[in-house]
Length: 499
Image (cartoon, rainbow, N blue to C red; front, side, top):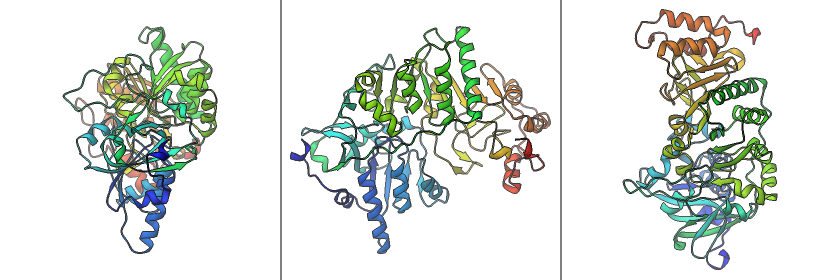
């Protein structure tokens, strides 16, 4: 249909429409739903211009990370500024060398910040869709993310029609863009699968400057099998949730769960699925991984609200082959809704996220190594942690073969503070921090979560620190980190053969 109303162009022709210095917004929330042909052509164009000695860089926005899109653009040195999240090894290196400026944001904040022009104007939006109609209805693919906002505020729009994806994805979509405050009504989402919007984004057709045809999968690989340490963490989490269920702090029909991306979350979901005592439950989350599709097929997950189908190409094929089953059980929303604090709190979501390190009072660092080098970004973890009915953070007790303790006197970068982190879990045990004062929190974290090889150091640090509401010694609180920089391990004399 679009052929008769919009100019059909090649990816190279579309890339040529993007100019140096422009702000370009890309669809996608992880690699799911990200455009594929145009960014690749844009990276190639950038390299060719650089080889000629010409300047060419863009400011890049997306809903979250984008997989190969970030890799390709970063490798060609096309990105000058990036927000709000990334997971590219190449781009991460450029950010940490200050070759690329990066703004790390809570994902729920992005749409409103765009609407108020805090990043300047969006010159071009490059959006993957399964269809666009003559009157400007855009049917998105495997991710909603921030694409509705990008389409609304961009001066120009390039649509990448991807025929690989099912046109029935519109049956999952629930697209609603919030008006700016103070003209907002309460968001009427009262259950994880409740819909309040439309299956498409409506835009002015005159903004569409080109349509590119494509037929590529999202390219998401299956997660690797979780390691033993991940299973031990998962067992701790599931046993805790069972205890909460039996003691009546979780209702008999359970509560919706949110889980971040990665092997720990995957392992927790698998162990939850194996427990006969956990009733079938819903997800209210921002990404849907392979393990959740397996549990949905088994009837353990009744349904899921998400931003994107972050599932492997093989699993996505299973979903497309049985849309009669999956379409009524999955809702794809914009991140402004999936990560909305009011909805998360109303539904009583249990959040599960991963930390790089946590300290003796429960602050969690999810983003930066040694306080300076970013890994990926805060993503949506803060949106859920601060507003969840029950917020859980997980991490192994040690890293790098025991050279690093993830339980430290003070985190080097605070993403989620002690007031929001309610439960901390490692393979050593679980610390329920609710209702505890700082001294009690410290005792529980050291006893339950720290690796035995580091407990003596942590106890000694705590006992020798100046007394206050929180015991802390500013002259020594980063001693473990300084040791790591100087000697390659946090405790230089520690025998690593025990790990």
